[in-house]
Image 1 (cartoon, rainbow, N blue to C red):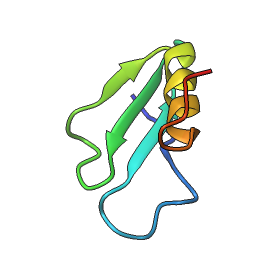
Image 2 (cartoon, rainbow, N blue to C red; image 1 turned 30 degrees about the horizontal axis):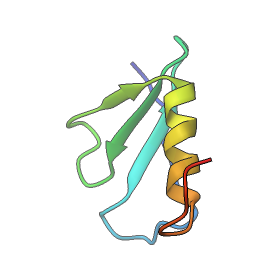
Image 3 (cartoon, one colour; image 1 turned 180 degrees about the vertical axis):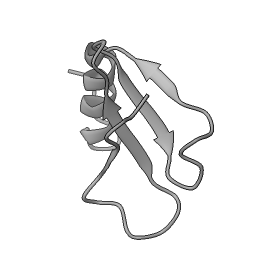
Length: 64
């Protein structure tokens, strides 16, 4: 499968970034940039959005 991987604008040019791709089947895939052909985590767009919301919360903040 040909994926269009994207990395965060917050990621430096190092090798410790997470890449994200949306698939034609409606899933979201994540992989580590240092080994993009290794393990690929697949999830739903809803679960991925929840992960991003949680990651953006200040430390110690209550979940929305």
